[in-house]
Amino acid sequence: MSSTVLVINSGSSSIKYQLIDPASGESLASGLVERIGEPEGRVEHRTGGRTTEQRNPVPDHAEGLRTVLNLFDEVGPALADAGVVAVGHRVVQGGRYYDSAVLIDDEVVDVIDRLAPLAPLHNPPNLTGIRVARELLPDVPHVAVFDTAFFRNLPEAAATYALDREVAERYNVRRYGAHGTSHQYVALKAAAMVGRPSAELRQVVLHLGNGASASAVYGGRAVDTSMGLTPLEGLVMGTRTGDIDPAVVFHLARNAGMSIDDIDDLLNKRSGLKGLTGYNDMREVHRLADGGDAEAILAVEVYAHRLRKYIGSYAAVMGGIDVLSFTAGVGENDALVRADAVAGLEFLGIEIDPERNVAPSREARYISPDGARVAVLVVPTNEELAIARQAVALL
Image 1 (cartoon, rainbow, N blue to C red):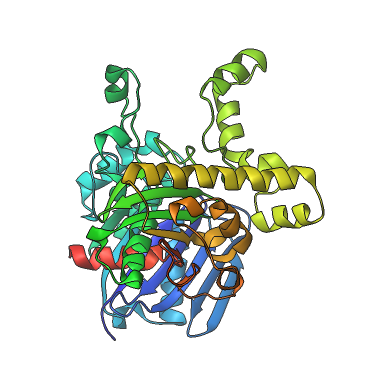
Image 2 (image 1 turned 120 degrees about the horizontal axis):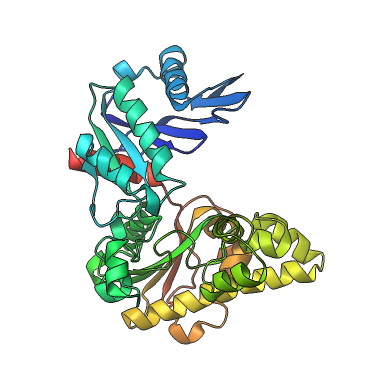
């Protein structure tokens, strides 16, 4: 068997993993440990077309990862025979420190820990996964790949908020972005699809899932992105507001008596599509809209309006667009959202072929008409493969 990388994405109560051959892109095994710390946990391990499921308590991440390693031994493929050359870890926030993958040592662990205030929901569980994996797999190099790395070198004009300089510097307030691993992967894949070097292209990538973000990629370099200090800024998302007047926070604190924690919970967990319709799943929102629900119809319009604003603004930033790519769960599967997002943008050379747009496919594909000025693509993202390849490239 050729060289492989075990990719781990550790969340607050879950561990997602894949064993990947970075050369071929093949996933040899994948799985999920969820409900960690709850009375009944669930482990799912998939390999060779078979799925093995276990339901039993998983008290902590250490026990969860031990269970995963046992499944590799019992069900396969055996890691000892898989040629594992690295363990790649997804880490959300790398701050100003990292613009590429990095070999994990005690200093890197300390930096990830210190950056936790910038990603309090993500960096701590990411770090838990790293600590446990380093303990259980001590003989393999561990590599951190950061969601923020692709946006580390944004132009200062794009990364800087017009906030008091001393306050911003003291508390590390700037635009960091997120989903960078996905944006970078899709931009490279899109360049290959259109047969032109990244250095020649002005690209907009729309990563549309429950979390959603946009990026402007000019000459292979990210020059702007919609998420900011945290993943709250930018597009309308499943449960997040996206862009909103900061004074809303003051207004709710003064007039509704809401605490900072209350407002944090409101903007991050009870807003977006869920706040507008009661559902954070776009499929449910469409179902309601198709039935004539006025709130759902408005939610779809608000969602698409924000997308068009970002596409147009990034065209202004780059002086035009050559490639527009849709990715992630909504971007890859929702033809209605794609059509709404580009409606009225023909003046930028952006248009889609209705038949290509609705044709079901899991493959990367064009949805723009032949000869269109802007190539509009659907590019399935593969963050795990990107992490695996970055790990191997580093080593």
